[in-house]
Image (cartoon, rainbow, N blue to C red; front, top):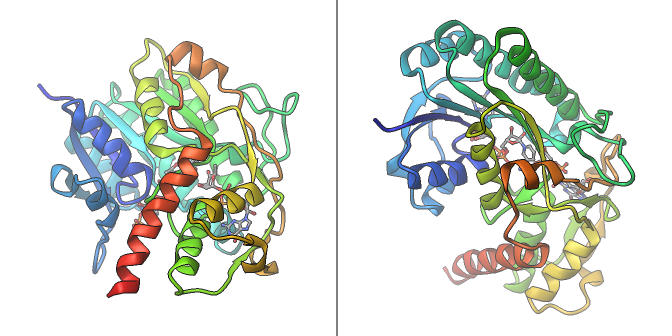
Length: 328
Ligand code: NAP
Ligand code: F7E
């Protein structure tokens, strides 16, 4: 019998990469979608798998829909990727962020406990939980948390409720503490995609400037397609555990900008950048860099795409897309 997986957040960035990864391994994949007047399958289309996923309706803020789904599907694995995932918006929409990101995983864990206790659970935890904390310049599984946004705070709750259901009820529940990962289907609000989209628009004359916030922030950026493998590997281990997943190197937003302009063959990048205070955060996370030793050693996982390759991939994809728009 085929293994089954339920992926929440199937229409986002990671959902489609994970679905493709699992489908290749012969899983039957269920994708949770909300009730929309007009759902957007663009990211799944980009990876060519829209028709290969079975869609089930529910909402992370609606406990009964999640209880029913787990009771009916009893999947082998649940990957909880759904979230209000944009840090910037979490300052203005803290309650919604908490309901989706903190209560959502609680509802799922409770449903698993009640109706399908052998289901393995993956929680999309994040480096944003570390905030200002580090251990000798890096963040690892033992680094304390000091979140700097309602998003980070909401994910700390989700992290601990996942640990608690593992300890209290023996569920196979894991936290993947993933550092920033990007791709050509990254949401347009996130800084990497905002930059590559902006650079492509400047290249084809559809924009004259790119407005950004803090160029000094440093992130450990990897490729989403690589990171979904780590999620899968966590659920294939003998015992459930929590893992930091990242590349171990970081770069500033400014370095990303410079490289993106270079790959688009646009000289003098500084003349296009406008620093706009509206894109600065009330409290910033200045410096994130993973120590992924545990994931490397225990999962045997490695990132395959370098920072330079990632920027190039994203710039090329946006140049191609924007060129079509500019020509139409
Ligand atoms: P994303 O592109 O923002 O996708 C999030 C998905 O969650 C969207 O498909 C969204 O659905 C869905 N969602 C939001 N609210 C929902 C609700 N109430 N009910 C059901 N679904 C809902 O995020 P991502 O980059 O793929 O990240 C996946 C997960 O990893 C998130 O939990 C994120 O917080 C976490 N994470 C991401 C990173 C990263 O660098 N990408 C790093 C660490 C952790 P709609 O399409 O309907 O809006
Ligand atoms: O910001 C700075 C901004 O929004 C990165 C989410 O996937 O990764 C993501 O969160 C940095 C920050 O991602 C702009 O201040 C400058 O320092 O791309 P971002 P994020 O906040 O790191 C973590 C791991 C997650 O879990 C989250 O879900 O870039 N920055 N200027 C800007 N950021 C944005 N968005 N826009 C700007 O104009």
